[in-house]
Image 1 (cartoon, rainbow, N blue to C red):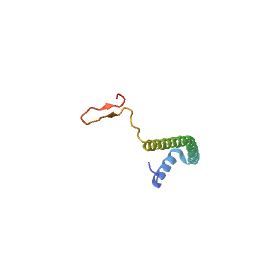
Image 2 (tube, one colour):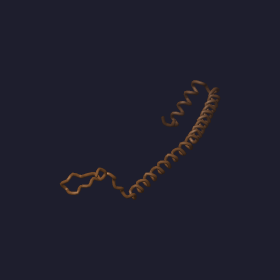
Image 3 (cartoon, rainbow, N blue to C red):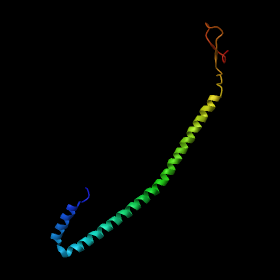
Image 4 (cartoon, helix red, strand yellow):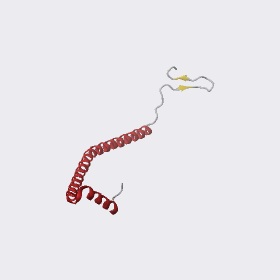
Amino acid sequence: MGQLGFSEMLLIFIVALLVFGPKKLPELGKSLGKGIREFKKATEELKSSWEDQVKDIATPLNEVKNDIHNMGQDMKSDFYQSLETTAEKPQEPSHSTAVASHPSEPAVSKEHA
């Protein structure tokens, strides 16, 4: 709904003048103005209260978000360090390697020989 133009305001004023009369119209305008002022004041208080509540909730949420991010970074760096450590270690041969003396003979395990 858009704002009221001059012609709409004039029409409302004429209807109010006819319905309430010239003696009651100033009182009605004063009451209406007071009501609008009270409504604006209440909405501003509600808005500021809402913003305070959001700030109170946002601070701990941001702290938790940062903690989770830091834990993820720590896990990532630990994972990469373990990969580097594993890559640097030489592979140890297994104790049960099979040895074939000739390609046509079956392989015999060192443990059984």
